[in-house]
Length: 141
Image (cartoon, rainbow, N blue to C red; front, side):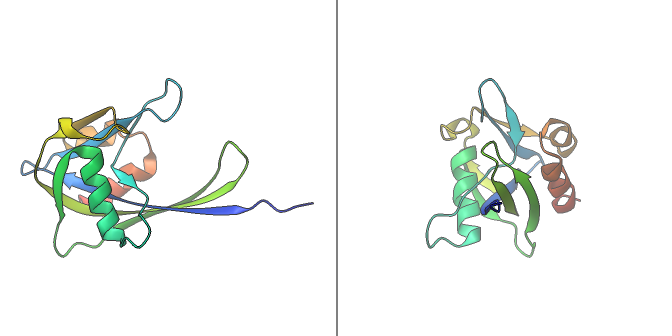
């Protein structure tokens, strides 16, 4: 019997707040007809530090200019799942608390179908994944 390979997948992202304390959330369409509300995140490029990747991915996916909130530690989501091909995936996502310093939510990249500013409570209702809700609660408490 052969063992199932484990794939390690790492992403970095941001929880972006505006001066009013609202959160930027993104809507994507990962599968046929499905829609997911989430926090902006993506894979680091070769040689890119985690914070750099988080800032770049967040800016690309939201259309916003962002900067990290000083003196805040990143949060980590760490979980396992099996993908459609039967591979075990160990997924880790590091999130940084960020603030918007400009930009326009309509200038997001093509991976995102909509960006919306919402209150923390609205984000907790809207976000698709429980682990992102937990991360939001931890970093915005």
